[in-house]
Length: 288
Image (cartoon, rainbow, N blue to C red; front, side, top):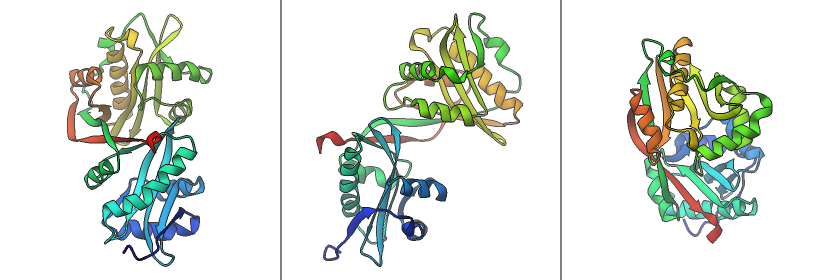
């Protein structure tokens, strides 16, 4: 295999069919997104392919996550190509390209077990773990029990995005902070986006999506200085009651292994951890 000249280059739209064929037939593929997302990543020059002309050997795709941080979202290697060899071919030019864009960290959520160890051999380290929680919808409304009279639960005004971004960045550690663009996206697409106001200041917010009988609490945040006052319980009760009114039967959410405050809140509301912990791998590219 080393005698064959493998060229790594930016993917073009003409490569779409070959990438999809590789996804279908290769044993080593990570691609948890659809065709349209792949098209957009290629158009934005966020995908590389390795080929010899007639044969596509592999691909790697990233997406911007936040300033100076990108997510490795897709990767595939042709059957028979050693994982470490394929990663070396694809990741080295990809990392150089990310640095040229001003990206200093590359992150991957290791949902697919086979890729975690090879990425760690490429310099990725475990930063944290994602834990998945779920519970059934409560039979009775919860909000009346947890209302806090000193705060007001309301919708977010479009002019408040900067204040919300500041709140989010205070509530979450890197790399879990949302950009203002990400918050605008959720504000426009979520089924419920609610904020808590205390004496004119934003002190918390929640974001909920409902798909049929399944609901997801995408985000729940309280300013660190206002934690321990019952505000998180108020937001969580409201989110669960909203999901119930929309006809959901189960609610899911994710949090981080190191976020013990959030875990305590969710467990207190009957959520239980399900499935395995997902390693969050990050590589610091600045040492290249």
